[in-house]
Amino acid sequence: MKASHVRKLIKPIDSAYSEMFSGRVFRVGTGAVSVRNHSGKAEQTVIGVHGFLENHCYFTQAYEAPTTELILLTCSNYHIPVNGVTPEAPDWEVPIKHLDGTIEYDACILNQALANLPSTDNIRVHGHSRGGAVILEAINQWPELYENVELVLEAPVLPQGRLSALVTAVLEPVSHGMWPWLIRLINSAPSSAYGQTFFGKMNPRKKQLLGKLFSATKDHLTIVRNIENLMAWMERTDTSVYSKVRYGTFLIPAVDRILDRQAMLASARQSPTTMRIVETEAPSHFITLDSKEWVPGFESLPATAQG
Image (cartoon, rainbow, N blue to C red; front, side, top):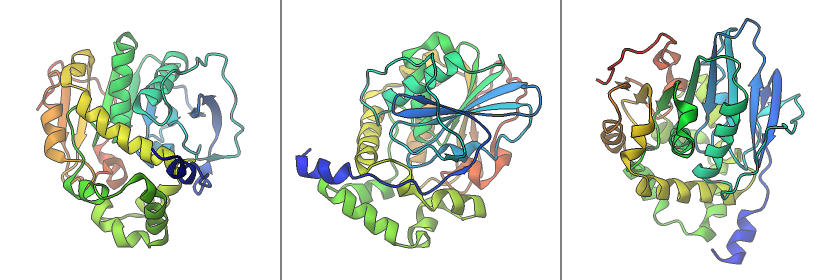
């Protein structure tokens, strides 16, 4: 990448979205992990891994039960979307050797969180979109850690997957030098101009969370690195990673304008039969935001669940 392009891409992006948060925030490398306070005795732990250009608030309304211990990742070089909390340095943090802004780096943040933070044995790791790839990469890096962990992979980026034809058409002509210009253009357009196309039918929560997408990262370089690494990861990761997966659910939307739905399904079908594939009626890539009804309950899964 040309130095002049890098200079343009590392100009800081100001944080544009945060919510009140009651809990603790731990810095891990250039990312973070937030642990929400829960009022009841924790019966289950959920770790949420947000997608590309999202933030951890994606999961907060889906897991509101007072008995749920909610642990939320902030991927590397993303703004932490909380106010009123000072991030602290945990004594369990281990330096991460991968390049930040990559799925491999964020997988290390996830593994440090999973190894050190849950207070229950009933653990679910829920990843949306790029977050699904982060989870599978994390399992690849440290399979033993996931022996008894339930997965929810929502509209996930998967091995041998693809971006949707629509997204590919938008990205193909874009060179590195054009990114800052393209992002400024998108940010200045009303989100309604492209929202319906990519995000499907809007609702208040979707508007709130998806309205500030291009302000989620601390710089434009992270956006470019995320996309390039994500495409490379899908291509080079084969479906053998599924042999390390124990049980859980793939949530597939009825319509996906971000990822290629057929490629996602074909990849998911290579997983063990203890992984359920649920083809939801969700009208967009953002299943949980379309309706919380698609989020699986915490009942134990049958031994062979694949549909």
